[in-house]
Length: 261
Length: 356
Ligand SMILES: Nc1ncnc2c1ncn2[C@@H]1O[C@H](COP(=O)(O)OP(=O)(O)OP(=O)(O)O)[C@@H](O)[C@H]1O
Ligand SMILES: [Mg+2]
Image (cartoon, rainbow over all chains, first blue to last red; front, side, top):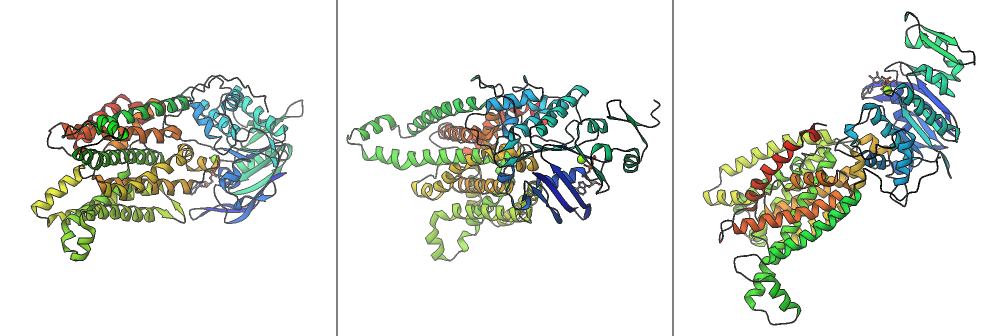
């Protein structure tokens, strides 16, 4: 099963932001979208979630064009972690996570699920805290827990579930970055699909199974990390020089050149 | 994924049980206040005694029956519905605009209603006598109701493009429309005579004194329908707290929620203002107080707002009937006099919550 974007052309206001982007993400894999600021990653993800309709092209999830699907049909098969979250009113952490259960058919009060999700993001004792009083990284992980309870089981009777994450580790410390990336990789290993926008190329090299490199509203490379994460491609896209080092265990290790190292 | 721990222990941070218990206590409070209100009045009729006689089939004095069933009961029910309607409308608007200070006034509903009332009071005499006779004293409430809906429809039309309503546009356009309506109202008031000015002032201060079965049967069902439907918005409004995009992601039909919220508010506020005039503060103070007690989760907030709003208005009505007895003070004066300072106090002791 796949999540596929085909020739997405998309306007925001009058500006054409995406100029025909293709992406194929497979269930069971972690797909990373990388690229410089403003290259259109978030916009592409918003098209994948069904939030904005492309001017042309389409998004097909588990064999269905999402254009014809209602929010209530999409919610049980895909969950979204936005790049930025807002909140009005002083909700507690537990109440925020429960919002992820809006479309689910949990019969009980959902407490067990909420508790489990908070444990998975490393916040087992935060359920009673006010969301607005948490640190930025804690808030981000609460939002991830909210997305997780929405599609807790990576595979359902009608196919895989899709976790769409916009920079899930952007405000996390190094340990939490690893926790969250492992969580995402585990979700994929169990058959779910994960699409994550990433800025950390080392984490991308460590965890991604498939990489899409974007530049100025176009997908300039798509493939395995080894194929996409090359000096030439990255330096071209990011406009600065990166040095790729290979680790003994066949991994890659990227350093900005001229960092004085 | 991971085996769920099914321990029955309550989850910290889930305040729904608090909301549920509070609903029970607020219901009891409303019942008590209602009984008190029924037994409270200038004529000294004892409501419990009359009700007891009525149930047991005893003879009831005619005047007692009139006082209780034709004066106090419709007034009681009107007060309950108006109080509940204003408080629930407030809670719904605050959820929709994602702002604890939002108020049905933002929809232009109140301004439209007062324009309708002003036009009816001042210009009503210009209508053909046949229409005037048919409308009778329903003219003012009818005009107020029509005015509220007209204002709301114009505002909704302005803020909605390609099937999407911009809440921010609505907020700002509402200010512009309210100003225009105020200007037109001013024009009409300019040519009012002294008696009309007096009527207008009393209308704008709000009162339940004119409550009757006829008015209640006209406006009551509209408010009641809005109240009954409102809890269906709870999930939608909770989701909207995370923004419109996130609400859609969790499966909420955002545009539907917005339209329903606006219709419910316009119906409840329009009908309330039409039969009781301008009664301020209930819509802001009641939901705010409840949020402090049991949190912003709309699951019980909407229901509890209705229950507490009804009690608050009944109490305000009793005060308005007592304070300068045997005369009556307009109830809007009471709600503003108590509500204003109370609201300031709440604000000052919770600054952090508003700035967060
Ligand atoms: N609402 C909008 N209206 C007009 N242009 C927009 C809008 N949102 C984004 N853009 C533009 O679209 C382009 C792509 O933005 P997008 O948010 O997709 O970038 P991104 O790759 O996610 O960047 P970042 O790494 O900074 O998050 C940018 O040039 C941005 O200025
Ligand atoms: Mg982005």
